[in-house]
Image (spheres, rainbow, N blue to C red):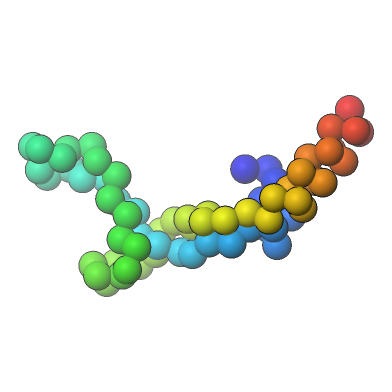
Length: 67
């Protein structure tokens, strides 16, 4: 998201490991997120959990006004 690049302080999240299941016939293609670090795999994704809404809408309004 471009807003994150412009104002990363508006977002909170955490680094987690995300993999795509390729072995199981029942869950093939499923995205698996290791929220609690139980696999001991290195984090490879930044999960954004929350956004400061007022700041985001202010940023959005300012950018739209420039058009």
